[in-house]
Length: 247
Image 1: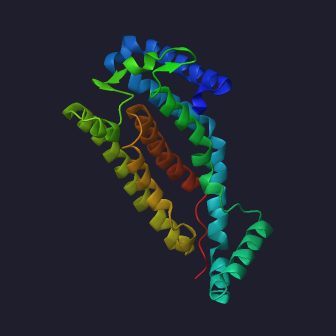
Image 2: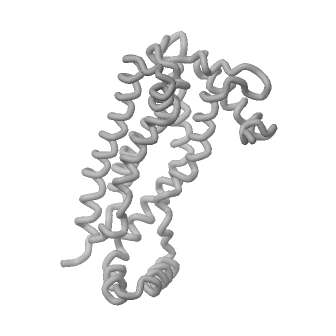
Image 3: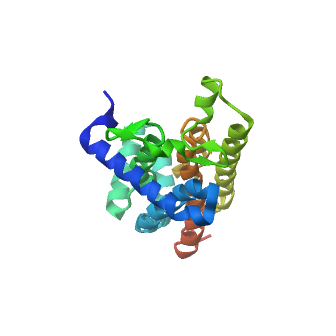
């Protein structure tokens, strides 16, 4: 059963397709062959703008977690042989202080439906009973509905596709490395909370791997949102700096 064939989902997908085509038509006189790619970038920026309050909440939660890092370290030492007790005590501390341990995942969770719709919009030959005009859109000659892995499996990988998707993947990986270098080390050094963020860096690079499997349009979305996330976190880090434990 195709989830996107269900009437409510198909209508939503049709709305996304129509919206993207309208943005492409608006940008075409200025952006020319880059209009389709820029339309995805604009959609991404619009979504991330709406999620700014979530980013602020995330920064506040990270600041609060850094403040709790010394107490969490005490709990880890006290209950290091009893993982269940450690988990209960940790969650009790978070509840007591009004801190959400999952706040850092909210931007990813809230964007997942948008990424899914962008993914589907460039994957289906027909949407809501009519042809999908997005499949005719390209970025520098590479169809926005083409993925790297899909092209390899279909034996359709050409130089333009490899270069275009390769550049997007490299940018995502580079932004992930910058995020790791500029954010994680300083946060850990100030708060001593390295154990509280064991997978954040890995998630940045996992996004680059995902970009190999999804259509180019979704990969451009992931690249844009990764860059936005880095910039937003750098700005909010200055507003909500990690707690510095007294020496």
